[in-house]
Length: 92
Image 1 (tube, rainbow, N blue to C red):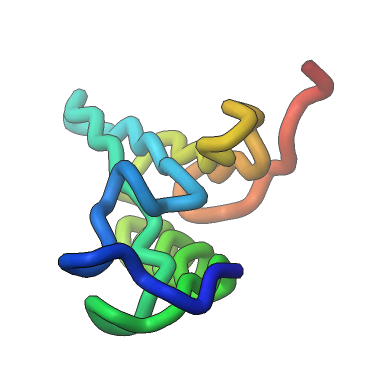
Image 2: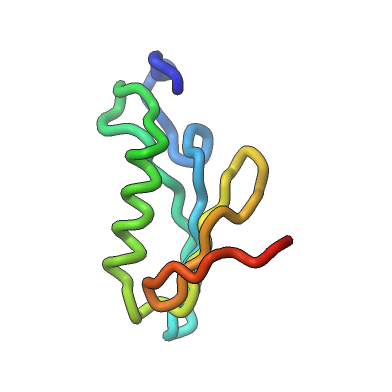
């Protein structure tokens, strides 16, 4: 974790550790990035970012067919959810 934020504060795609893709039952697809900081100049905390993504999954619940969380640095899928429930990840 970094203790110093960049000049001007954190930016979504540049400073996020995770990306989540959600496929909704109505056909929409959304990509969201983790917010790994509590405020603009706070240190990065990946637990904060992951917690926020999991809260979104719980909020979407049965409206979402599938949600997948990826680690941005490696591109590896680290979690998969179906209708808000963790279904684990397949061996890749």
